[in-house]
Image (cartoon, rainbow, N blue to C red):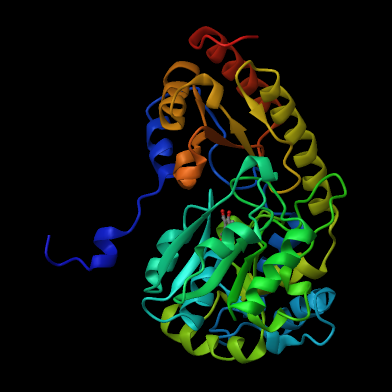
Length: 389
Ligand SMILES: Cc1ncc(COP(=O)(O)O)c(C=O)c1O
């Protein structure tokens, strides 16, 4: 049809959505598909929203967000830079808008943005919205699913403007180690690039693993925009609130764009987010403890199935399991698994071509569901594939 823009015509379809639609045709399915907490938003956060509505926080907020929320976030991020103030913070409609906003504020049509493969399936489309060109960099299991500076450098051209890093990673569950971050920072300096550091899972880290952000490298800090969200750590996916932290000269230009996109983030939602950030953290600590136990139920279970291997994810709530020994494509596997075993996972190929031979499973689910899912996958694999036990 002729009325559509090239963007609408070419926008990539979500491979996750496809599995979702397939699963809807069956009863009694265990869904390990959607990347969201299975917990409800903690009560103190809900109460703060209700109170804010009653107190009249029902009008437009400033484009950049409520000053008290921006200041609270800036205070937290003094862990990255002691000089950060509210001028270094922009409030957005979830991490999703934060990513798009970073791109709209810093790239011009035709610029190239480096994105991870396998990577969050929305990145490619977001780069397209900004009129830029996505360039994928492969991430390999041999490197503990760490993106490497060497692979990034191979993808750099004179048109490269920015690199998108995601740690902890969706879908890989990996955390980029400090050593590699420092090497990437050298490239950022050498080629004068911008970094979008998507850290929306930074509170979901297990086993005492050290988290190191590229924003902690003083030599490149002004070139880094950190993206974060209330969705994952505080079980607030439906509230739609996130933020960007970074160079105040870039941030200062974002409110103009925000005016034209959504004007502002819902005002009482910002009050609830302030409570999430500054209020009691017991519910968050409990969720993290539950995710850790659930990670082990799922990943230990998968590793006991012949033909499947899965690295222990140090962060996020995703497991990325290797099924190369089964000799099928990841899409064939995922579709057949729904039909025969009633378990829904996402084929690795939905996250980029390097994801072929893997599937992603979400462990933000109940212990019982995860135990049942492992049992069903185990029976299905043993019945369907000829693999050595
Ligand atoms: C890596 C990554 N970044 C950003 C987001 C965006 O989350 P939200 O817009 O809910 O904050 C997600 C959500 O799944 C994600 O996995």
